[in-house]
Amino acid sequence: MEISGSGDVNDSPAQLAALAEDAARALSLRTSDPMDGDILASPGEMYEVLGSLKLLVDHLARCLPELATWLEQCLWAGRIGSRDPWDYGEIVESIFEVTSALARARRVSCTLGRELHTAQTASSDLVVSE
Image (cartoon, rainbow, N blue to C red; front, side):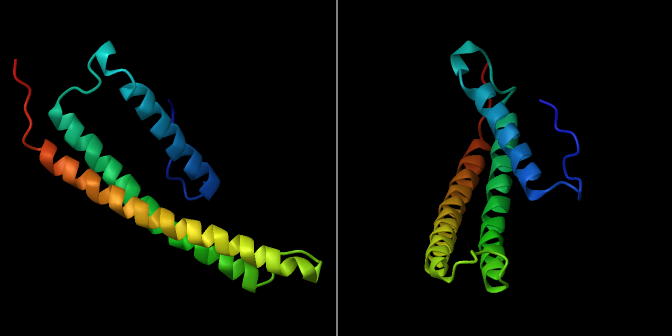
């Protein structure tokens, strides 16, 4: 997998999310068949992977409320909607559903981040016996 342009300030949020998805897919493929061979070089690598995953989840949890805020600001600024005033209630309901789902996703991702931290901490004492 090649990740070019990663972190470029000109990358759109959609491009950055696609890069994260590509990386997660590659990690999933790499770890999908542990019986096929060693998927990690050592418990130390597991510690590093868990730490990176925790940071990924933490960053994701931080951006979710911002997405909801952006959506609400677009509604109030009149940048989202329909020319038909009767559609306004449906639009507001959709935005409410999106922002509610984002709030739930943030709570779940915060829990996931804590669990990844717990796993990382527990993995710090592991060694490979020959």
